[in-house]
Amino acid sequence: MKELPLAEVYRLIEPGPVVLLTTRSKQGRANVMTMSWHMMAGIAPPTMACVVSSDDFSFFALRQTKECVVAIPAIGLAEKVVKVGNCSGRDTDKFATAWLTPLPAERVSAPLIAECFANLECRVIDIRLVNKYNLFVLEVLKAWIDPGQPKPKTIHHIGNGAFVVDGEVVHFQSRIP
Image 1 (cartoon, rainbow, N blue to C red):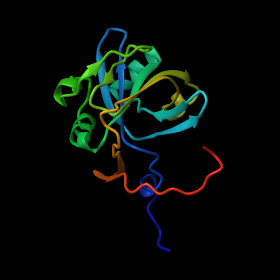
Image 2 (cartoon, rainbow, N blue to C red):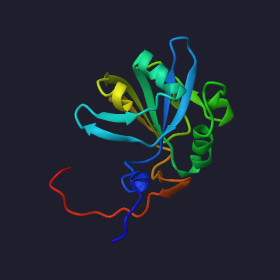
Image 3 (tube, rainbow, N blue to C red):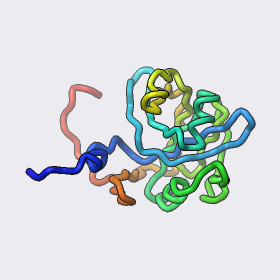
């Protein structure tokens, strides 16, 4: 074994695909950010936890409105995902900059993203860890899937501008459906 710098640990425990989180402020301005620090927290109802830095423009809209959309892009959107992640919504219309199409959601004011293969309309249900860890707990209220993208490959950030893409699906017997 060789010692690994602690600053590299996050690269080993990457929690899932890179997603896009959309918000709409009470003033009506929509924003989108790239996010890879999230995890499922419950199945029924579906809940997830995500970390949104207080330095991010989306943090304030999420805290204010307590709603968002988690949009899941496939590999074909990788360059747009990186572009969204490399600029600030404070001074940039990220939807226009990345050529992403906002669509109206049914249960929240934040927009869906037409180009993503899945969109999850969410509301914040727990903010107890926001002040300490910037961690929001979300309940998924409505889920959308694009049947035109039947086998999407997701991208996973492993640090320092590097990503991996979903690979081969392997099945093993499970007692849990």
